[in-house]
Image 1 (cartoon, rainbow, N blue to C red):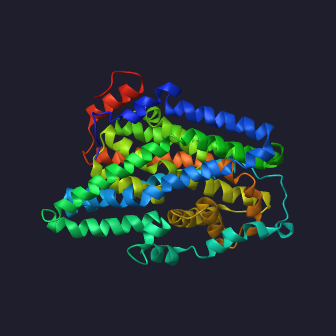
Image 2 (spheres, helix red, strand yellow):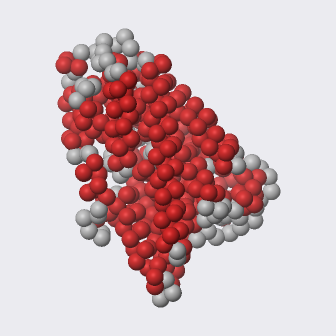
Image 3 (tube, helix red, strand yellow):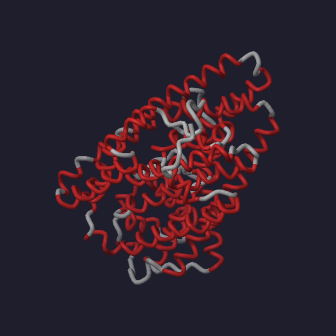
Length: 437
């Protein structure tokens, strides 16, 4: 699936040198977006379609890429036990790490108490601005989540873009092809060619990333400003700080135990990290990340199974936001939560956070569903988070992307499906060393 040498860089990416590397272009776009939003707020709001259009362009490629990657990976893996083993290891890893993220968020909110002193009367809040989110949240739950995994039709997931349903359909189709893989080899090869074409589209779309970052950041600053966010600056800053600490301590520790450098990985995927930060969307970089992880030395079969599933089951950044957000609202409304209530909260979040994939405003909707199911913290208090939703979504999305990337490498190493020499050449190339091919 990956063409070229070990590094896999194509001619398109090499031609970008006239304007500098993509990460630098995106960084310039972010800085310009902040400046435009601060100086021309009314005009900046009109630039929102630049970011939205970019995300839509990338999103249109996700369904065929995820489906084809899963099918090709399983069909070529051949061994049903291997498929089950990789899936089981991935789910165990996801559960452990996302639980650590929830614990860190709860501990930070208890220690820092970002909502203390706000003394908000939930009964006086206007909840009309969150009715759309709460309506969606009422449809969330264990039963709804389980039924939501099942596609309503073969074409349904491709129309709605539901990642989890696409994964399920791809797994079932791949398993169906496995016993007759010699007969269906032309079909599998055709799906592989489809992947190459779709990744070609993604590479072209990525050229628009700097404009997308400019438009998204200009809209965020122009729409919300800085002064209006003063009461919530503390919560926003602490959410960023905890996210950074989680990446450095937890993900850095996992990477070290697995035998690779998180810092070198971040340098390698810096384009995708900056695009995620600029657009506040992790979906925008799923396809290029899958390609890069294959180029790094992770087996195609592992990438195809772990990376898309990680977007649903391993949302570490969302887990931090959910636990911190819930306690922030409790503190802001003077709702006391004892140890037992907080343990219950974490247990509920461990379930509801797994059902947020493919839902617009996923973190916000999941938090609303959690509060509604507990009947303890006023759901109406969520209006307090609307003003900073987009700002806290940046670290949330970035941590999700980094967490899924680390998970894929860890499980590839766990499965002895990781090419260490290829990774070394890729890391050296990204750090300015000799190219790998």
